[in-house]
Image (cartoon, rainbow, N blue to C red; front, side, top):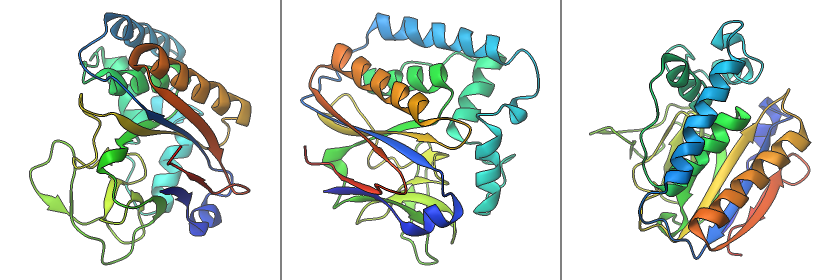
Length: 236
């Protein structure tokens, strides 16, 4: 099982980096007040950092709006995951607990102001690729939606051998591969575009791996993918 970034992604986004954390032997059952407390702390810290200027002009959000425009999505209609989290925090709309893994990646996303997501590896078919959608992609049902829809041609998606598992890069994930309390093996990704530096991404990846081990147990393996290293194995 491989995780790879297609060459066409680097043609449009040559400086993109993806931090990959694979984890196995996880216990994702129940809730953890310590994680919830960290979510609240991260929300408060993020709000403090946004006190000056418009959300859309923040240096860690504006590049994602530009990326969305580049592959044909309207950033006003389809918010990147980090812009969505930031707007909710600023409005005072606190995040509800989903499960430990999702809560943990929300902590890291808020704390480092980068998009973070995750999938259940046991629900992945074949490997995972970050790629531009073709014009004949299979329909996919996204989280919170009743109907299946096909990705638009040219949009950036994560997909496995069956179809898309996350649309518009990090806009919304598929229901099929979502993290649940029964998840025992997972892959989580942290995405970065300039001006996020390599060492800042590494800190976020280490933070994510540490939180997973402390609160969900198991073993984690971390990798940074970029133009020089566009793929990694997921069967660690």
